Image (tube, rainbow, N blue to C red; front, side):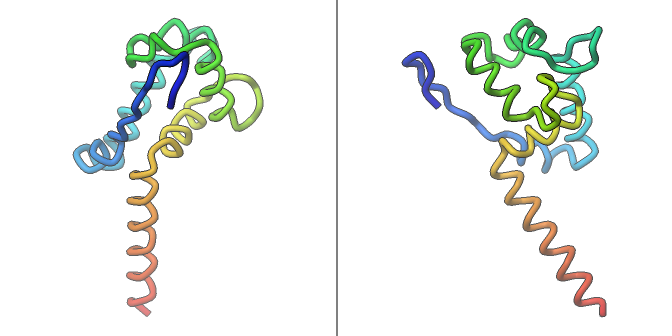
Length: 117
């Protein structure tokens, strides 16, 4: 991803976190990330709260347009903010490795169900 002639690399750590923490642990960590970025009064991640708190995640060099784009991509209900569920869905969508791992686990579970018949 290139912005303002700066190159940013995305490192997908979610699959590694899922492997080390398990499903419940990963969700707990996502909840902590959401809490870190959210507007305390509104209980959602807004543009202002993301801009204010993004430095905690190393995103302090992101432009306003980049931050707005992140919000738009994750905003499923169109209210201009991210709820906790929207944030978690966005994290999964941004993690191709985790999506592949989830598809593999789903296929294994379905195969197990068919084998049991």
